[in-house]
Length: 125
Image 1 (cartoon, helix red, strand yellow):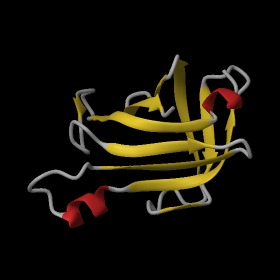
Image 2: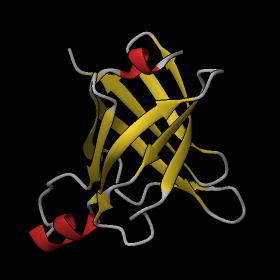
Image 3: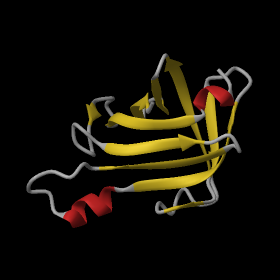
Image 4: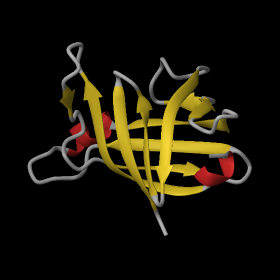
């Protein structure tokens, strides 16, 4: 894989975190909302949060948002994505480099950090 394989818009299908025992849970619910955008200038923008649902207050949805952006690169092996975070609503991310393992199969991508979290995305056509 190369940076060119990422170019486009990707819609979130699922998002799982893993607890200390390795058990998966869905902090954003069974159908999270969000997108990852990768453009030809080498910039990434990622936003992910809970979906609007009956009984879920707008404040809870707003507080669930995870947003960051900055320049991205793919390693030579084509399986690790790095985003140098220019800004984010998550203080720990500001000024950091976020590194993720990823694999693209057709129009689907699995991306994450082993043992911490995994997201499944689908290319928007």
